[in-house]
Length: 161
Image (cartoon, rainbow, N blue to C red; front, side, top):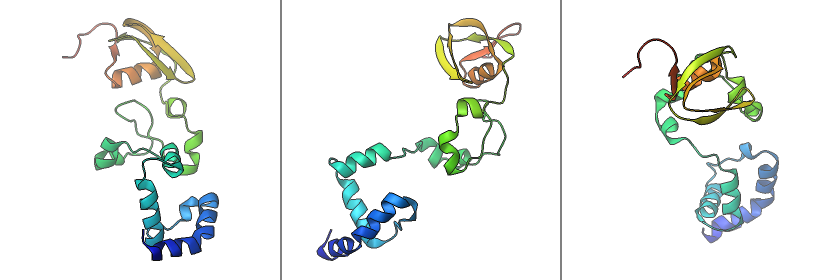
């Protein structure tokens, strides 16, 4: 960072600190001075800022963020990979949202599944520890396991290829 940028940042430091502590979303990241300082700080691999950045970073799920077909979901439809409800949320509600409870659509009626391997799975506030083979599980768990390819509904019929 050059002398002019450093002087301008120093002049605005109190304002920046105030925004960072009170309302970080109001920072203008297109501001050239602020952008240069943040780029310089985030390029450092060690130090206090780098540690704070790693601690607070939101890591993107690359396959989802780069595939636009995965970004658009019809609210209240079922997610094909889990059987959970697609639930619209405001950013403020994210902390209170538990997808393993709040997005579960199916009930607790027992359904027999043939599990391909042993596993432990939390759902609806309970952790289920299951062995390979046929087990009776709540309907919501059966749907999830089948969607993930970990189980099939047990009883009559042939296995899919």
